[in-house]
Image (cartoon, rainbow, N blue to C red; front, side):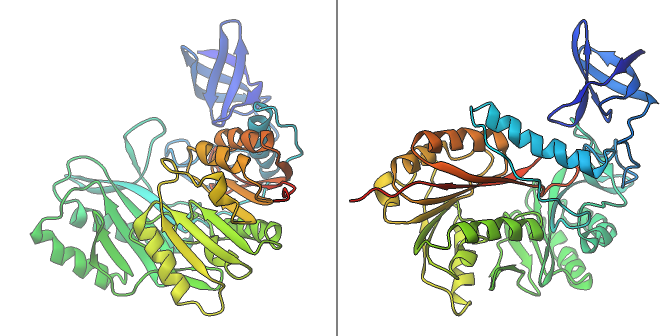
Length: 413
């Protein structure tokens, strides 16, 4: 055992101690603390806190440090928010972008409307929860202060459902649970085909427990009520297990930033549009062309648009923007562009956008490193940053979202 003093907090929320042999990474330790640690190579296992930081607080969940769902429940909110904001500042700086970053838009506990649980059938019954950090071991949870109360209250029924939908799976599988306006939707993946003998018990369970929909392997087993999610004025029937911004308030905050920036635009291209979280809000102020590679998401967007009166024209295009980004000539038909790519970012699409003369751009990202790379491309193409706002959508985790607003003077044609 070794005593160390923690110097700083790392990107993954590990406390980092400097030693003659190099940095040692200690999960659950905070800057300024003196800790007793078992060290193996550059990893430390926290044995005890000898001198605690004044910023250390009591974790909100009994499973913290064992369950891998949260990394940093033990840090007080003010320094926690500074740490998350700084992750974005550092990513920008590493790409030569010196720009004032706004304060973090905070996340509230018990606000996540979508969670992906791991489950496994055992001889003693099913276990359901999150994986231990850097492990395939599932921690069977009894509470989760991150998710909406409706999801937390459903944990016992989800655990009871798991053996009914496990099929012949010997390994862990996933249960994506989404709280919708119609109730809970459960989508099971990785369990393999559901045997015929299991279909009736599973559907009976879904009816008895008042689930809005139960899907296994992409197949809808039963749908007593179509699950709808509000995007502005629109109610969108989301596909089974479909992507959704995890926290409704965070989605609203990001959409409001986009709407304010694009208020002068008359034609907007929404790239990586998903099921329309931004498109259907933007359609209240402008014509929108939504481009998305996932067919079911695009179909949900279309149904949401057609059932919502009072929106401007929305057109849709199924297109893989990684393989075939919109060219700068295509982009020049628009005076506003919003792009919200997955974690990999939108490097090729950003290169085309940098060559365009679209005056207003909104870049939404779930990963600061690829956002900073893409912003560097846009800045080198003549865009100017107007604001960068970090948004906390995954409370107590290392993840941070961001919304960057950019402008470029439009060239005369």
